[in-house]
Image (cartoon, rainbow, N blue to C red; front, side, top):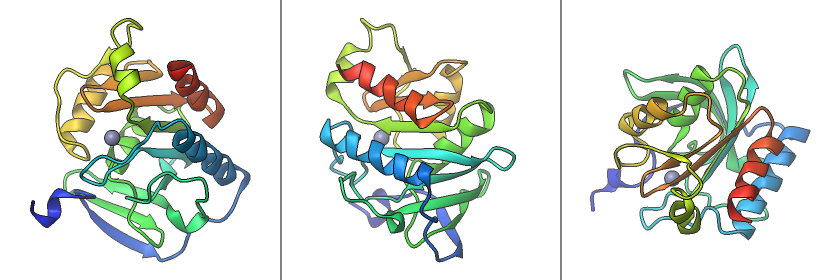
Length: 194
Ligand SMILES: [Zn+2]
């Protein structure tokens, strides 16, 4: 396996090496990461990727705070394990951030979704065989093709199906929940597993 097989598939430009400030929102995000861990909604894949959760902080610029790459979702996350994504340059696969570590490998996907859905302020992505198995009976929309995580191809697959839906399935991969608030996105995940 070549080294670039794992982790993020874009280059990261660190504007500031600083963690996002503690805030009510970040505390809430940490709480939902804990929820994902507790209910095994983001077990790490063999290639190292796990789930990723974000909330939007500036609608005008699509800035958001997201889990760092390969941190694993545990119950004791601190601010240092989150990254502020400032901008994404799709044509050159470059991301500008403030943070100590690289942002989640799906940061381009989060940015693209915030870009087409201005009312969305929270995106939660996880992996659950149980949810994948229940997709058909629940009529959740599924992406047409299975493509590698963290790629522009995956972004395209998702943008093709999301419309105004708030819970969609990535074929043979996982799920995405959207909300105006983290509570909304989290409750969709709860509904999917309970
Ligand atoms: Zn994934």
